[in-house]
Length: 112
Image (tube, rainbow, N blue to C red; front, side, top):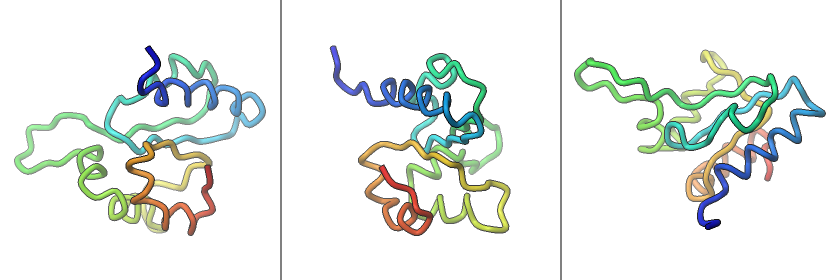
């Protein structure tokens, strides 16, 4: 069965890239826990998934849900120059979400 293997296959690609670029940083802009993360990379690189920690705060919306609600608006806020998050060297997302991020990717020189 090979349906929807991208979330697994990308980890092998990242493992290969990390061998030559151990200072790389990777952010996963997709629903929470969509990839096997470090279990397939086996490299000491910086990786981050969107937070989806449950909270008992009324009206709280986690990062993953915020991103899924409005991908383009989320990245503009998440990576704003005065914000807490710096741009990673690599971003992983689904094709269906990437179409909403094309302007952001072009402006920051990300390519496939």
